[in-house]
Image (spheres, rainbow, N blue to C red):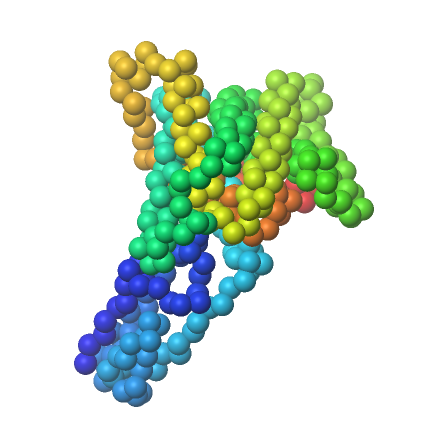
Length: 367
């Protein structure tokens, strides 16, 4: 008897994952399928057949072997939001680590503007790939077609510019902070997002949420206390200013993007992502021309890139897509709170990679 492994990326289970997460899910499930089928083949060689009427996950009969329970996953928006938020937490926790790790002798050997452009280009390509799968399986509809009105597209340059500035500052802030300290300061995003959430989207926040914002301010300050030097805070004034500017930019861009995405709920998230990333590529290309044109012309676009740089770009791209999906299926408050969990993971990993000293002030402030 023989086992045939299904190809999840060419066939789809009706009623399972939504189209906008199918591309990511099929890659993950292919890995799981490969592992599972190796175990099935190994067990099957032992001759312990349980039954002949066995169905695969695609509803096709398999002869001999073990009994498999067919499971049809009906995931609602809340469940998808939870899954994507967990993925975002893991991606966010490794983001700062990869940026610090990509430096050589305290400097970036590659161009941060080309790295940013590569992130936007990769996100755009992934969105197009997801749309291509949807078009092949369901055809082109009003909600998943790329062509749209000027009024709908013209709103995307604003968050694209804000994200450009914020992402560039993200590289330069590491001249003043380490990876765990960066994650601590990123909690300022929660405060700015909460305030802008109330002002722009007119959504009322509970007293518990406002109390949480105050505690976050206290936690950020406590974690930055430095008893081993003459300075009260570990992070210098320049680092705090950059962190505050990044928090304001990130908060406004996030809330503005959520308003755009949820203005037309039926619109496919990959179409919305595509236009945001296209404008991101345009503005990053301008940044390359202004800041690194000579270096790129003389040394090449990918000069100074390493394996860590490539992993960092992949991490940023997947994080960006995960953020947009959280905005679609949850909201910005959920997105920024994932950062709070990520900072603990970042601190633990940094202890082993960068010999980060986990002080009592940091522990109290982060928890």
